[in-house]
Amino acid sequence: MKTEPQRLRHFASDNYAGICPEAWAALAEANVGHSVSYGEDQWTAKAADALREIFETDCEVFFVFNGTAANSLSLASLGQSYHSVLCHELAHVETDECGAPEFFSNGMKVLLLPGANGKIDPAAIERTVTRRTDIHFPKPCAVSVTNATEVGTVYTPDEVKAISVKVKQSGLKLHMDGARFANAVASLNVKPKEITWQAGVDVLCFGGSKNGLPLGEAVVFFNHALAHEFDFRCKQAGQLASKMRFLAAPWLGMFQTGAWLRHAAHANAMAQALADLLKAIPEAKILFPRQANSVFVELPAYVIVALRQAGWKFYTFIGQGGCRLMCAWDTQPEDVQAFIADLKRLLVEAPKDAALSADHRKL
Image: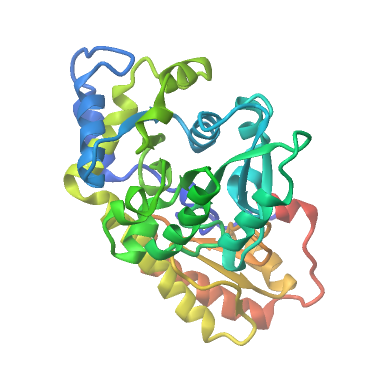
């Protein structure tokens, strides 16, 4: 049986990457001696204060294990079971949460909005909200935006504000899925407040695990009233860590050293290098603007098969098709060069009759 070549790093997901040195060092420091449990420790308090400094405002901060919990619980806090949340048709809360937002809100419905390049068309918000207002329709209570989006594009401050205007005019709340929020900030070179609370965002799910943390996301409420009893939601959902310092300490390490932005900027730069090299290959068609740390490219089916047989892992069913090539905090220039070299070679050498199978879609 032929075995796949072993590679140190891949382009499937920034979740593949390990723990960055800054987070690892903070974990080791927090691992000395005993500390108070359930978030009453100094690490959790300091990490929450660091987030307040990053956003330059007072806000309520909660640390949870993963993005599904962060998104689902925060959305549930914005309304009741008979309400609905509006999001882009490609949003992670719709396509990849296994119904968790609906489950944790006891039935809140997710309504889909169109928009080019993974971004919500603001006009679609008003159309959806006013389309029906009768008691038989799930009443909209919030809009969720993803920044960076599922196709690697980034909402600018003005774009977030344009959505916020429609949201507030309709009496709704604005939620931001920031699984790759650091990449968006690094891409825009703006202060975090400019694309969050200053632009009208009520609650942000700030992703850490894709930016070098071992696990963990921060739920940041800029609207304090919405955070009422959110700690109870976390406990009920199994998201209250007894040893909370191990969720919080890596955040502190990232903020104190500036690593959260440095690593995001590096991942973005590696994606740009990859996109530049792909643009020079006639058989490769870039599908979306490269603005964060991913590149979406359309490749011939036979070469996708050949690249995977050569040991490369990447997804082909995220976004609107094509191959998603995701760079991480530890992606190196030699990884980019090696992938491009194999792609060029296999475009010539690989059998042209190979076709993608269902199994390939799962990688």
